[in-house]
Length: 100
Image (tube, rainbow, N blue to C red; front, side, top):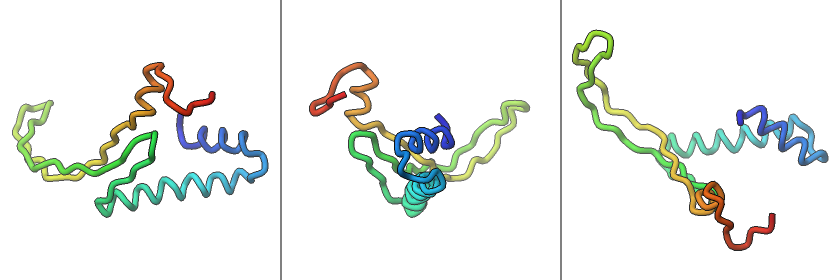
């Protein structure tokens, strides 16, 4: 699913909201997650998962085309760990309190 499909589905399920408002809500949520990760904070969505930032040390890599050694700088990368409820749903196990 891409962002525009998410917006469309939320708009369809909430006809009392204007699509432009749904777009603003979705963009705001994504922007806030991005800002928190940029600050190095962790974002946890209970039952869904947690976003965090991991640091990768500088290293020497190889150019796959030439085989030449290349210096790869240290960097921070986003990381997502699924929550237990999401893992259970994906594996066909029903979680407690689920009505659908």
